[in-house]
Length: 325
Picture 1 (cartoon, rainbow, N blue to C red):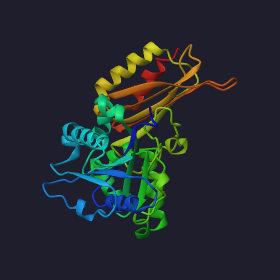
Picture 2: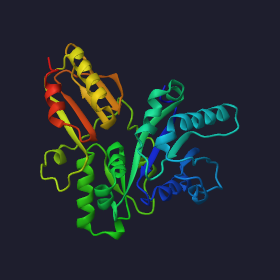
Picture 3: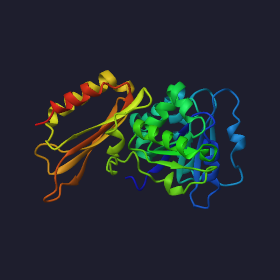
Picture 4: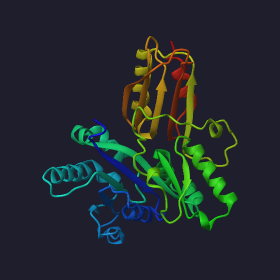
């Protein structure tokens, strides 16, 4: 199914971080992909559409009726449906979609669109959320802007722009902070949008069977320099889960904390199962799938990462421990 679906990349980042520069780079690259771009502007008059290259085969659609997170369900579903219909009629030809959100957007509702609408989920594959962070202003934006933290929390890849404007110490400090907020997203420098296409497209960050990559080093360091509202933690256990207990507990969690649970994902060891269980969620949308078979002699264990706003870590950890067989 995934091979037939149209992959979608959500490109986000705070105002002035360099999203449009990166998008132009993607459109200019001789990668052979035909891309439909959904461009969101905050306000009635869009300007980014004028900044994008117009002399290639890309299909660019503007959404300039306000913040994408406020109108995403209706407008985004309608636009994606329209693109599908035009593609099937042969009016446009594209192989993938890039959605650029406005700098003030929470990318969560954009990602949720691919969970809540069956027709969209069948035709399109949410590939990844790519977040651009301004190295010069990133620290201050993370301090002052909730949206900046949320954008980092949702990321599958973090691209650090304007690194030439800061010294090595400042860049390393910001990179360490980003990794504490979101340990599962690699942080890469990007200069004027110059980044390998493989770092942006076909990441499969939302693929349930993708490798769950967590850097434990940042999570084991308790010396936090910032009291960020968005943070992360990991649950690990070598004991198997009781499937029914875990399902009941997770269902309760998303009812209470769902709006603040930005991303969560895990590879689980379930009692009586000879295969891994892979799960992930966005806010209150959660899904699970059967993973690969446990290998002979392999040490079975569970790893779960939670990224969210002011989540009560102790409550999550104690509750998950009570779900172990």
